[in-house]
Image 1 (spheres, one colour):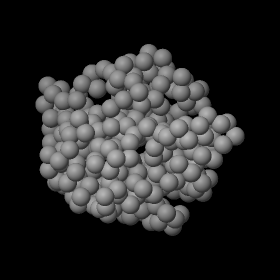
Image 2 (cartoon, helix red, strand yellow):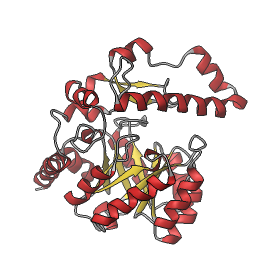
Image 3 (cartoon, one colour):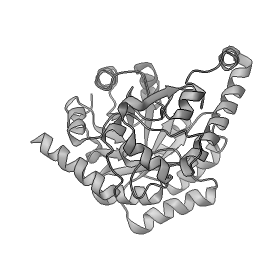
Length: 321
């Protein structure tokens, strides 16, 4: 079990990653996080072209030399994977977070370049494979995460990964207050990845309706659906979600059980779901599909990232005393 904390690993002030959020994380959010003494990452897929991805990295680096990362989807649903990987090898962010697939190629090609590789995992079996491949740290995606959540209680998952591997463990899911960050660190985690509480920030690019929903709804309104991406996804239980239902239809389930069709159906479902989420993220309609995690409970107003982080980190410091 490693005692290296995320702040020491990256040379930052606090052991926090502002989590990469699909369609949401942008350069303004990254810069605000770095200024506050934490690190942050954005999904490579938030940029449609290679040029836009390069421009985003250049924009951040024009204002700071502090470490930030990029999230890379490493399964077949990301047809841009190879080109994005080449760009990141060239531009060398401080770290890459891998999700939804086998990170072996990323680890083998990026670590020799000085890029740390943190891997999303939801259980010990996956964590052991990642460890064998040479990852730098695990991101323990627990049952309280937003987006593609895991299925294990936060503390149980951290302790399983700590005792079952030798890698540092970053807890991901459910944190909205500094006291919760301190608690996660007391379990032995090296840091935390926090996302939901920043969706309603001034810097966030989402629609006003999405931000208002983050304030109006609470933890009891978060549900899981398998209809959007083929994997369980946490969303706000809006009237449209209630109408649509959260369980896959019999036809969708049948297609998933067919080995030949499975990979193609998952690609189609993921693409279709992404388009629905994208429309909801940036514009209001009756078809509202807004991703969030249980930490929505701690969002009570729309405010700047600096203010959200200041409160979080002051609470963290006070809880440690």
